Image (cartoon, rainbow, N blue to C red; front, side, top):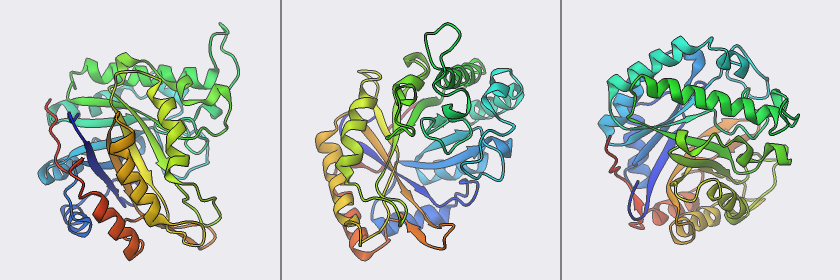
Length: 323
């Protein structure tokens, strides 16, 4: 992690599997925003049953470190569908150990530094590994925990242990929660999912402003302030990462340029443990035909705010990690 400042990163629209990474897209993005990126994020869904060799090669050639959202998710990769063949009980039982081992062996052979976030945003309801699908807040047999979070933690620890046992020590593991727990209940808070400092290198979370036309406008600090404290309390020493951050362009609700300016100004100034932020750059069509535009250039004013904000030398465009 950087001694001073924080790494600048991006997720570029990667298609349905969130894994389409090209040199041309990376170069276009850099030219448009005016700065090189230290972290490039994409997904490696278990439904693909492969290690993303091409993507990590492209990102390395560009000069960045990959952040891989390694998600136990099967096609068609639609949210709010519930568990699939990669359900947590199957992972716990070892049915996917061979795949995990193959992925780990290829990661080791690759050998260069990478960040890996397994089972992201588990404290929501939209992904099939969310605790709500596995007993939620029901007490465990020993009465010491909650069934959903405990099963998630067991699987997280199992996956990390298997990967490490294969010698893939070039991976830094990211615990990646959502800033706001859904449902907002004691059993579903991010702290109940934390698998332990021995299997986590970075504390991460997603922080989003308004994403949908019918959503509610929230300022950057509305999203960030309390969530930062909650995440920081999980471990007093570990670096923190905004593994996803973004906001849509909805001028009738609020000012995206102001949101962006606040984030880029205040992250280095007021949140000292944040050592990197990955900005989500995507535009998509919603089921009702409306659009959500989280691209940095969703308007000339938003792009100007982003370009000006990242000129601050606190925002670092080149990684300094070593294996």
